[in-house]
Image 1: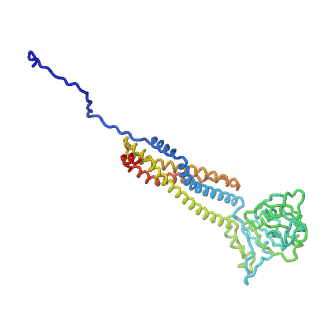
Image 2 (image 1 turned 90 degrees about the vertical axis):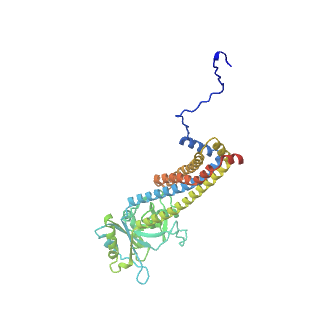
Image 3 (image 1 turned 120 degrees about the horizontal axis):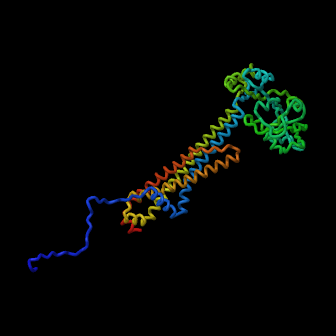
Length: 420
């Protein structure tokens, strides 16, 4: 007992425990978007070769899409530029089939009658000549090289909007003498070089001096493989009558349809049903329509390649989840949530697909530029399809990465650590 009635207080010595105040809160830090991107990009560097091969499938699909659309737009722009320069107001009048199924002919007066139509700006006729074209007299007459001989009016050059690559066109003097203007294809087949030293070809049984060579004629491609001579000298080459085999008519651009309806009756009033009237630009429009069909087919093939690339990315991401179970287990044991784990693999999938999409867009633009430059076209890069292709790669990456991300998020940490 204490003396004097003192009260002794015993103090227990021990560690002090800090009790949380009522205002304390647990702070949970979530991964930022930048952290997710860095972590996802780092995951792609683990297997660089596999990453490159996986992105290649998407790159091929995007390259096909961008390249096909770019080349289609460049080709269409070049065609439209040619039509704007040459005009769509050129009509051709040619003999059709007779009543008995034989070949009809145009009257000699058809050119003059067509030229009197008020909406006709110019008219020029060509007449087929039954003769062969040879490089020299030693070449057999049977080897024609697919070159035909036509006699043309002097205003044919302006009517069809043709241009000369070399030399000059026929005039009042040369049309009466053995002079010839060759089409671009005919000159190539005859191996005609520069005309400075004088070049002759044989038409029938006599030599003709080549005075000019045409550039390819867009709206009258049949002239490319023709040897064109004057109408006066053509009578000396051929003993037969030479009726017009075709008439090229340049009309008022605002009156093309109305003039076209009058040409058959004007060219041959007695038999308008035996006359064919066409517009060369319609053939170019049909060619453009066919090109669009092939473009759609190529786009479909590009879409298939893109789908295959997406499936490849999904397969790679599933394998990546299986290979990195230990990493998943460690992160889960340290407190990472399922959302963080799934987000990591989803970001990896999107980055992988975006990498392929970006590479494909660059390759597609390069292919478009290279081919358009080789063809002499203006480079038209469809930026909307490029942007759509990149967006498509993002969507594909998100869709195909969803399943691997969910699978990674569902891995229990204890099982992952035990089986790793």
